Image (tube, rainbow, N blue to C red):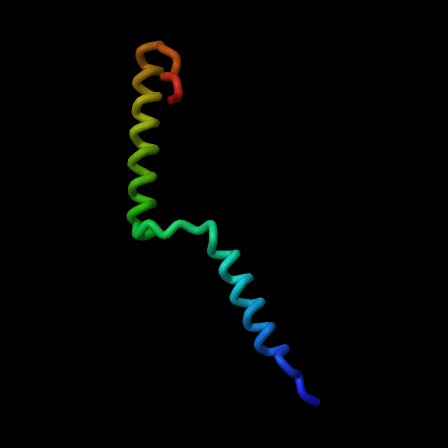
Length: 64
């Protein structure tokens, strides 16, 4: 029993599927820990701005 080109077709199908899965992923060169630190800093700044606005009795600043 020969399989013909089924193995080659399956490999091509698997490569196509893998390419589709990786299509939307970002590759910007930033490591996970650096991104986490950056996100944490942004959130701390937002939290400080909100607390400052709350302390002065103002509403939260408008979103951009």
